[in-house]
Amino acid sequence: MPPSASPDVAVVGGSIGGLTAALLLRDAGYRVTVHERSPTTLEARGAGIAVLEQTLRYPVERLGVDPAAISTHTEWVRFLQPDGSTAYAEPRAYRFSAWNTIYRVLHDAFPAERYRLGRELTGFRSRERCVELTFAGGETCDADLLVCADGIGSASRQQLFPEVSPVYAGYVAWRGTVPEADLSGSAYDALHDALTYQVLPHSHILVYPIPGLDGAVEPGRRLMNMVWYRNVPPDELAGFLTDRRGVRREVSLPPGQVRAERVEEMRAVAADRLAPPIAEVVTTVAEPFVQAVFDIEVPGMASGRACLVGDAAFAVRPHAAAGTAKAAEDGWVLTEELLRADGDVDVALPRWEERQLALGSGLLARTREIGDSSQFSGDFRPGDPRLVFGLYGPGR
Image (cartoon, rainbow, N blue to C red; front, side, top):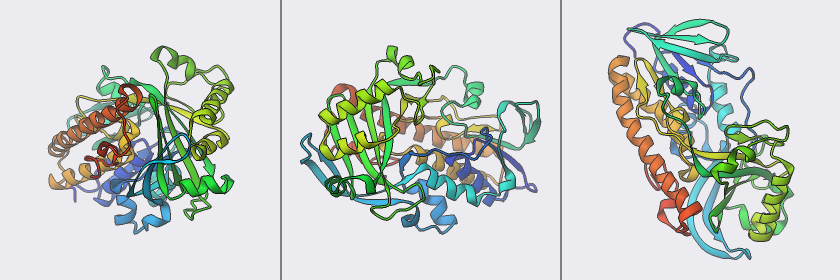
């Protein structure tokens, strides 16, 4: 327990990483308030995620949730040829979920009165024993510790490390889902029990089942999720991320906002080059969306009594399936170090920072290597052990 009575922690950003940290610090005896910029409860339909042990650790260990109730399960990894035949297969168990599913579990476990919507942080400053936060509208408050979980566009990171900016990786991820019930029998049979890949020149695609919008995890009631990595030259990215209304987006185009001609081109390439089961998924997605892939690496994760967690510190490419796991692990290790230091923030943060900087930089280097091997160097191979998902290394 912390040494003083109910120390105050402010968590900025109420997504999976922020909520995990908030719940853990609440459990450790801190008085935690989550400040979420959005005026409404967060929602991200269509965002499938692989769930590693660290992602599910809080729901399983602290809430007693059965992983099978909130995630799908696959037993195989398969790589398909363009004609639909199997190029490579290996038995390997993975779990997958949807962003919404994990978020709901965490959100429902946190006190509603401490989860404050419409709270946009505009600045903060560290004092001797606290941090003063300023929000849009001019309201201020003090906290003993500020945990910044405000994502890839983090204003907190910009304040601490103004020299750090996202570096475009040279490719984007096309994403979307299709109800399994809408697939043909042959496509369902080919895809339902596996993480399925196809490798193309300077590209690759993954397909896997995730819970349905109602949380259903039974085969036949789930969604089939696709992620297709395609190169977009840097000088074309601004135009690519301009939506149907002519608005330039910085990171992603949400469902319904990708320009029609780009969707048509993507579907035409899918029909021509992808294995029939995978092509069926891609061409059936009603409203595909796009996320540009960026690298972000910070030289530090803490300053005074403020720290950066998750994508606010390191935005890593998705190829190790470890982004949400890294965000969750930041919260676990932060709480561990605070308890080890008897609640002394000034002692705990440097220890935590050293550990999580090493983890973040190593993970980023690994995912960069995998992405570049697929999209540029052409040495991305089925069965490559580098492709095994894991936070601390392949399979770890």
